[in-house]
Each structure stands twice: as C-alpha cells, then as structure tokens.
Image (tube, rainbow, N blue to C red; front, side, top):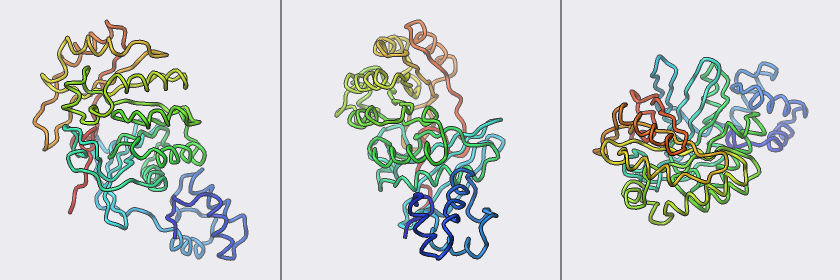
Length: 338
C-alpha cells in the first residue's frame, strides 16, 4: 500500500481501474489533490462513497502529534509522527499574498552541527519524496494564502538524502506547479550533493550554510567541514552558479563573539568572490538551543558585519527570525515527544 502523496499519476490511474471506476475519476483525483491542492475529503466532484474507499487505499503518511501557532498566527509548526514512530517537524510561514513551507528531509540529522537542535538529537532515517510532498500539501491545507515557496531547511541535511529531495523537487514543480526558482535546497556543504544538484535539470536555488569564514572555526561549528573544507564547498558552489546561471545564497548564524567580528566579515567577503551573479549572505541571529551555550549577536553587531560584507562587494541581508516562540526558527527543529 502506498501513502496518499507518494502515489504518482499512473498509480492513481491503476488504483481507480482496480476499484472499477471510470478513468476520468483518476484525472479528477489528481487535479484535486495536486493542482487544486485540496484535502481528499473536500473533492466535491467525487462521490463520497468513493472518497471513503480512497481514504482507506491511500492513507496519509503522518499523523499530527502537535500543532503550534506564533507571530500573530502567521507561523505554524507541526510535529508529525510516521507509522514507524519517526517524528519530523514542518513550518508554515504566511505573508499577505503568499506562503512559504520549510520542510524536513530527514528524521533527525547526522551532521552534528553544534548549535543546531536537530544535529544535537542525532539521525533516525531519511524521508521519502512522498513524505516531503505531503508536508507541503498539508501545510497548504492550513493556509489561505497559496504556497509559492518551499525551502529545504527543516530537519536533516537535504543533500545527504539527495535523490529523494530531487524527486520531491520534480514533483513540486510538475504536480503542484511551483517555480523551480522558488524551491531552495540548503546544505552545510555536502560537496557530492552539490555536484549532483548541478546536474539536476531544474534550476533550483542553492543555499549553503557557512557560519564561519575559515576552516578552523567552521570545523568546531560544522563537523562536516573536516571532510569537505571551505575551499571545496565554495568551488562546488561556484560551479553550480556557473552552470545554472543562478546566484548562490549563503546562510550565516551570527554567534556573539564567536563568528561576528569585523576581521571575520572581511575574511568572509574575501572568500565569496568570483561567483557568477555575485554572492548573497543571509545573516541570521543565532537561535537558542538547549545543547549549545552560545548567544545570538546583537542587532548593532550584525548590522556592522553586514556593512563590512557590502564594503567587500558581497550583498548581505539581516533576516528576521520567525517562530522562535514555538521553537520553529532555524536550528530549533527536533523531535519533541518520547
């Protein structure tokens, strides 16, 4: 038995035939679930009796453990539980005319980044493409705004689960009609994954989490740097920008007194030269986690860091954290219950 959003169009057609229904029901089902993005029980052009059978044949992959709201109800976080007990979290961020979903690609994470709650909790398993797509559609069901952007910045390292992530990107593009440019795949520096993404047919946005301008500090914060040092990561990112003609984004969690000093901004700007279309750095105040003693940089220090990057020819944006009150911000996602 396949789950609801793991089923592709040919599988839906086969199921409808098996149930003895006319072929056009498969088209109605596909259009309703993916193009219209409606829950199964709201497909009014399909008989209720058939909907009940389809609900049995195509169960959801996740049940809801908890759902929390923050930021005047514009940020929502779900803790889902799979049939095998694996738990993941998904975040919906609503704006006036659109919405963004932050999806998990793994239950847990094996990267071990010291300041990240997911990495502190360890790795459980990869998610399937169907489980990733389900996160987007179930978040859409809760949003009056149409989901236009998906960021692979939830639990897990997306490019450690590359094929499932790329499969999910293809389905989000083909089935839901999302622009490839509105799909962002984030990585802490999985060089083979970046190389695979470079060969991928869709020009998705690549975001690289740096967090340090040199190998010595980055190895302390991002243990994967011992395998793929900064030079190799940046070379792979440059090749991606050149091949795709897309600007690469870099994520930088600002930690007070650790990676936010003026000379570090200058060093970072020096490293981010030679990118087609330039490089763009998103500066994010560190989000508190129980397992890391560091504190976020204050606003003035982050602003000064951004100014030095710009002076060095690198575009920089200071990001506003959303969802911190419900532990839904960057680096805060983890399993919450036994």
